[in-house]
Length: 108
Length: 150
Image (cartoon, rainbow over the protein chains, first blue to last red):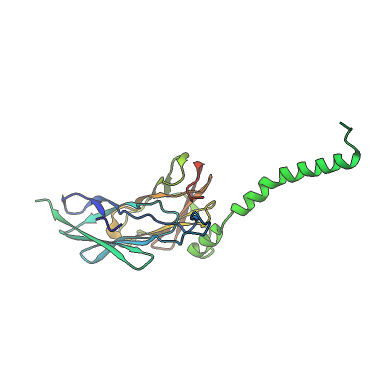
């Protein structure tokens, strides 16, 4: 379950360029609607929040509900005005946070 | 075999009425708390049509993973940007799908996610701008296989 999240973004960007970021994290996203073999409901366990920051400033975030597919894929954009680090965080229902970082440089 | 008497004929007729009524009853049950979600997000104001584009397949063969792309026209500057986009599905056990929050650093108010749909239903997106204006768009998605387990 604690697989490394997959993140795709360019290594460098021109100043002011809008780049696309694609992220995917492995998670079963148990909706809480399914029943097990004994007919008991399987408790909900999902990633309920995703955030992305660039150099400490918020870029994009979202609150997720059980209606998000397993292995949540999130694609969004970011404007790059300076070089720096993107920080990504996925928060699980049980409180664990999966984090990742990616650096981006400015095109010379 | 004896002929159907008057009483039996009435019973049969009643059965037909029940059969025709049942699908309607089932529909009413499916309806979820989408209206409540929308009201909480909009604060009771009516969102205007337009500005939002919602891209979803017309027919989803597998409701477990339906690609969704939402975009809102906006300059995305510090003065005017899209703050939030809420997505709800009115035929799922729970109406909420996701609430996306943007900042001027997002550059573009556009995001793509994959969602679960239990049955054929409307997917509604409502965008809240930085000045409080609301815009909406909705799409019907036909679902062949539902995506909420069983």
